Every structure is written in structure tokens, then in C-alpha cells.
Length: 90
View 1 (cartoon, rainbow, N blue to C red):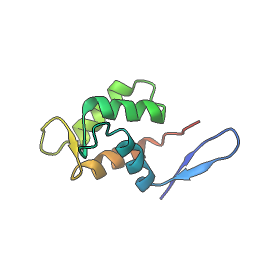
View 2 (view 1 turned 30 degrees about the vertical axis):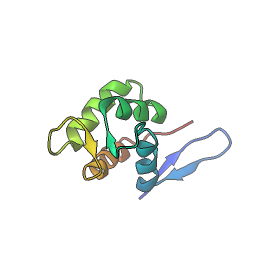
View 3 (view 1 turned 60 degrees about the vertical axis):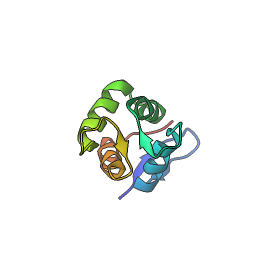
View 4 (view 1 turned 60 degrees about the horizontal axis):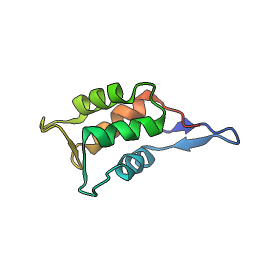
């Protein structure tokens, strides 16, 4: 399944692996762990109206071990949560 990113010039389909790459580009310290702040920045990039709210819900959905961050074992759950929201990037 794919979701569409919209652009004034053209629409581009986004896949889950592309969402994964978007999240990982916000791993500022390259530790393969996403903090709340990094997740918030990713949701802002995706166009969330209230990125902090989406980051909180995304972390709640994906943080299986409840350590307050999203590690590589939990990233697919965060991607799944985000994919269901069907964001469009302009």
C-alpha cells in the first residue's frame, strides 16, 4: 500500500520505507534512537497541525518497552501509526 504526497507540480506516492527514512533523518545525534523532540520535528516536517500532540500519540503507540524513546525495534510501529494518518507533504 502507498500514500500520496502532494506537490503543486505533481503527486508522489509515499511508502512505509520512505516514512522510515523521514523519521531517521531527524535522528540528530545518530544514535538510532528517536527522542520526543526528534519525533516532534519529524511530524512538523510531515505537516502535522500540532506536531507535539502527534509525537506524544506516536510515542505512546510505538514505545513498547516504555523507556520514553523509539528505538530501531519500535520504529516500524511508529511508521505504521504515521502511515495510517495519511499525511500529504506540500
